[in-house]
Image (cartoon, rainbow, N blue to C red; front, side, top):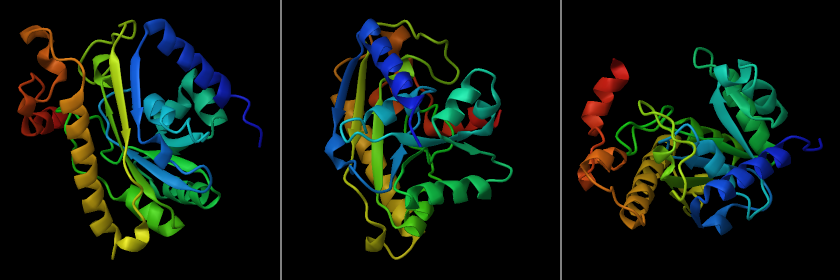
Length: 242
């Protein structure tokens, strides 16, 4: 099936990146396979993460099919675009259908993007991971690649005003080594390792990030354990329940 919508959307996004002069750094893009199925499992700190996670696969000339909540597909503007780019809708009340669709896509050689935390992390640390990413990888017999994203929360995240016109913001994308399902006895063991790898990658991107908060009023985007003003994981959990 010809890709009539996805390439123009990518081109428009890249134009926006140039206009805003975003300082995008991508490391580990060579890990994304040029052929065959794979799962990209990314941390989740911003409403824009899918754009930048997908950008990490461009070197391998892959288009990532992201799993996203169903409401995005029913929106009058985003819906037609999401369907045309063949992303995968997730109905959290009946998730088996989206799971089957994702496994089918992986078996057909697609790269599927997943945010295994399910929701944005207000603490900017890695939350508990759902096991869907590793289960579908095992079922389709494809690798899982952990992906760490950092800096996108400064543009648009939960509980903060959008600053989409912000210029010169550094964005870090770090893609880890592929995880082969055959190396793990079960999906739970693989999921535990994924969580450890993802947390290590996120911590590295945070510590190597080229900017620091300009002052106390600007510290909200840095996690508490690094001296920032973001909620701790415990505080974030309370906010998520409210």
